[in-house]
Structure formats: structure tokens, C-alpha cells
Amino acid sequence: MKLLFYFTLILSSLANASKIDQTSRIIRGIITQKSSKTINVKNCTYNKEKWAMLLITKQSFKETLKFNKGCDIEGQYVTKMEHFFNVPLKIRNKEFQKIKFDLKIEIEFKNDMILKLSFKNGQLHRHKDIFQFKGSQSFIIDPLNPDKIIKRNLGGSIHITHNKEKKTFKI
Image (cartoon, rainbow, N blue to C red):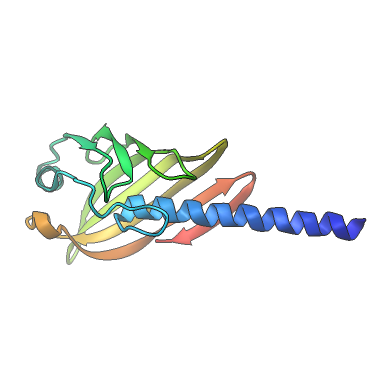
């Protein structure tokens, strides 16, 4: 009887780990704008010129994303530099319905121009489950080239919590 209990406990723990791994792929895809088997973001139509202007002049704007053949996210938000702003998005996926998080965008000048993204108060909804997350990401950028603003991904991390289980993923 004890063996059955331990076996059930191990199986439920593995199932939860798999859910957290799936969650990390969704969050990574949205934050880094890289498609995966879990989410497609390659054809999301971001206003590249306005993003470049935000980075150069700190001028806020409203971004609107719509579902399309290569974009599994939809929603709108108003951007801000150096302050957290809310990003609520619907997700077109069998497992996940919506994501929301507070995002802060900062620029740091070193040898290169570095874009720093911080996100907190994140929630990813999977049916009745809610996965909490926070994290950060950095990039070397060239805002004067709107077609290729991001020159290099410097990495970051996502911290996900679900049912008292915590896991950290590198981006």
C-alpha cells in the first residue's frame, strides 16, 4: 500500500514538472519572440518603428496584436520606458488561454546599447491552473535599425511557481 502511495506521488510530481516545462516554453516564446512547438509568434505584427522610437525617445504608444496564421497571441497594451506596464494577452493554444504580466523596459549604455526587460506579477492560465512567474531578459540592440533592432540575446531567466513547486529556466 505504501509503495502505491509513493508511486502515485512520483507520477503526480512528474506531471506537474511537465506542465511547468510547457509553461516555460510559452513564456520564453512570448518574451524572446521565438516560436516553438507550443506557441507560434513568428508572424506577430509588432510596430517596429514605434518600438525603435520608444527606445530612442521614450515615447509611449499603444501596441495591438491580432491572431493570424503565424501569431498565437492577441491583445493590446500601452508601452512605457523605465516603468512597469501591464501586458494582457490571449493565447490561441489547446492548453493555455491567456497570459498577463507587468513589463519594465530599460536601456543601459556600456560598450553597446543594452535593452533590459524585467517582468513580474506574471500569470499564465492553463484551464483552471494558474502559473505564477517573474524574470528578466537582456539584449544588445541597435534601435536605428528597425528591421533588426535586436543584435544579440544576452540571456535571462524565468522563475515559475505552481502548487508550491518552483523552477527556474534560462532564456
